[in-house]
Length: 439
Image (tube, rainbow, N blue to C red; front, side, top):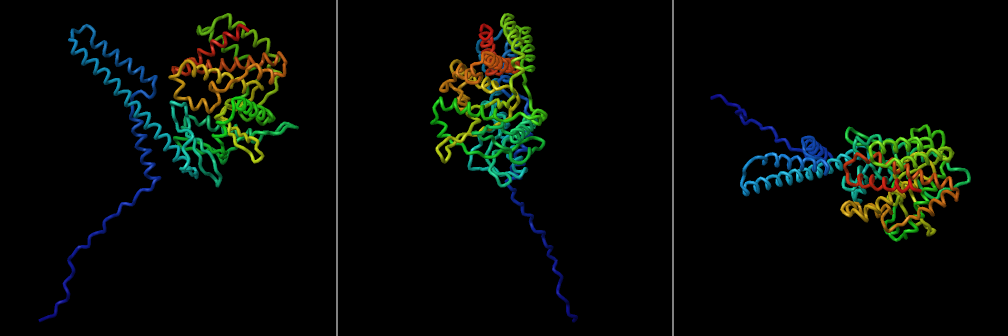
């Protein structure tokens, strides 16, 4: 009997089960961003309160048309009315869900951009701003780290690319501007760290992190707050406006532009029936008469938003106040009255809203208080004019005309807006211009 060898092993070896690798936080964030974007792209309802009111009116009109000429019982009408209210409520609910999803997508997309740019977010600090339309916040602003430096990231949507790039240019202009001979700065101007970074959805920049002392700011008196605002404006005007600054693309509002634009704005508002011919004639004549004097004014840098929310304050070792100015988005070249004009106009408007439109003011109350532009801070316009003009009547007139020019600019920008705050500002500034026309 022949010896048989070992039988072959007929057992088939099964391939090892594939183990699903856990997703990294970055992968999960990217997938979540993509899912949110898909939901946002598929949404077809109203995106804001104005659009919602239009849609709600359409639903009411459709309901009325459906009931016209039809004999229906009181019970049926009540049921139809309830259906109409339910449809309106459902539309509003979907709009709020859409708004929440959009804000979440914006914040996550901003964080993703910061990460891909090599930045690191300081998760121990809450964002300073996070795309909140109710508070008019168009950007995500958060403390973090970049290039081994503590920074503040500012990120907006791609539609604000020009705004971010222009702000970067403005920061470079200020950084390179020489100080006027014989002058010393007692305010620090924030500096940019790195370059603008962007992708298809978002664009951002980073500026140096500057320590603020909120408790110290709360303890400041109204008089101290006004003085600090004046200190920042005066320090900015100690920087020389060079040819390089003029050629950088920085907007320039010289006397000729101010007078020319004012004439055009007034003509337009007259044609639209928003202002009376008597006020227009008085103001246009004032701008014409002041043109030589306005043109002779020395050009200076204008911040445009030199209020408390953009001013950081801390106590120095010697007990004095260290003051820093941030947010140079609105930097331009104009005359020495322009920053004060804008502060006075904003203060008057916000105090008007606080006193007369609490439903508009309450959502922004904290922001306005942080800006030092609420009722607790009083600006003595005449004292400011006297100080800046040095008692020169022509300069005092130029101050008031610059303030009128700023009002006109805001009216032209806001006059077709459906936002209640914009409408309120237009109405107030038109009334103030009428008062200016009587002076």
